[in-house]
Amino acid sequence: MITYNPKDWFTFIFRVHRSETFRQLIPLMIGIGVYAFGISYYELHHWLDNDTVELTRNISVVYSILGFTLSLLLVFRTNSAYDRWWEGRKHWGTLTNSSRALAAHFNALVGVENDPARKTLAEYISLFPYTLQAHLRSAKVSKENISQKFSINALGTENIEKVATAGNQPLEVYKQLVAYVQELRTRDEFTVGDMYLFKSELNTLIEVSGGCERIKSTPIPFSYSVFLKKFIFFYVMLFPVVYGLNMSYFIVPVTIFILYVLASIELIAEEIEDPFNGEANDLPTAEIAENIKKAVDEVLLK
Image (cartoon, rainbow, N blue to C red):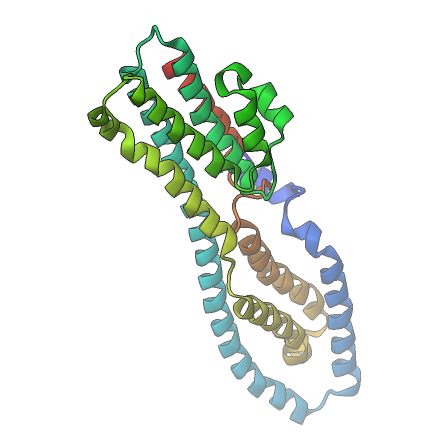
């Protein structure tokens, strides 16, 4: 995720970041510029008469209605994409809070003299978001990475192997955490009544995972996305035809600018509607997972 100062206008205006849509649209803008120039040249030199001017003036009224319709569609598109981004952020905020609360409950229930149990609980709580952020990127956390970042003695070689080979790694971590909590209860580390203190936080882990998977696996409907792209394309292609006689060769930069604005909105929406891929404008899930580990270790291990 890009870190920036929202008050630094000068930098925003004159700096082209590698993640900006301008870079992606350069080939298309060049092509549209050549097209707009050709249309304008033909209209000015081969199609200039009073009837044609009157015809384009009438068409411009219909064209303005189409522009209003397109603006409504783009507003809905950006709002729906941002809602998905913000929902993902809320899920990871909930995961952070629940992990801290879960660590605090275990800190109160498991005595400081039982350091191995506290270490194991801390590692499981921290491993869950670590595997979840990889899972949401359609990736796997390898056995080597888990062994380097987490304690082999606390988790056990066999359990690490199960997590590394699992189809759904966060689910496997959650399953092992629940099994270990049940094991501690049978060893009288805490009672059944004590388990109700952290039951909701424990369940929240899997609820967050399911919510993020729902965002990941439910894209914007295909027909809507395709229709909007076609609408933008034909709207831009018609612009020099409708206004070429009125704007002369100024139609070229204006058409390019309109393409840049409309296509950029669609590209931004495409990027933020799936906020877990690790791209420039996506959620910093890896950093959040690191912060959760630090907070959990501070509660249970210090």
